[in-house]
Length: 231
Image (tube, rainbow, N blue to C red; front, top):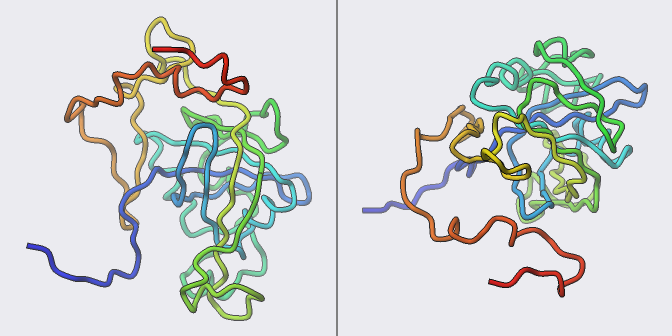
């Protein structure tokens, strides 16, 4: 039997991401987030428009999406109520955040230079995605607290930011044996968030997938459709 409910959030389960960006002075800001989804080499993320991450992202037009595994759950938790913006926005004050300039240090993380963007990667994360901004859009304007226009309330606007992934770094231990470009889903253990709690995947595959019968290479985007492999 189903019942009608009105939860305050629809946080039904998404991967945790540590997003690294460059501050105006060239230092690194890193922040946890989980409002994200991927399609091909594109990614859409949702951010509080008043955060330091958003300010950096819109100014620099680039970032790195660092994906922790279940083994790095400590990192987003240490960062969860820290902000790189000073002074704090009213909503962060109300939720008990505090300013921290060295967020990498506070989380026990280290930086590795990226190849194609200036923002560094988080060394400890098994998967690191260098990305550039394609577009940004106000999001959630149908909710009064997120209405479009000038932000004059204590609840900042939310932005949806479209990213293009330009380089993927993965720990070699995560790859399918004998294949250079394929991450083995049986080896990759992403950290997930559901209703603000941390979770991992259940051990092993739970049901055979017909989609997985399609060779993964056939999902690769091809500029020349004539090069598209045939069945």
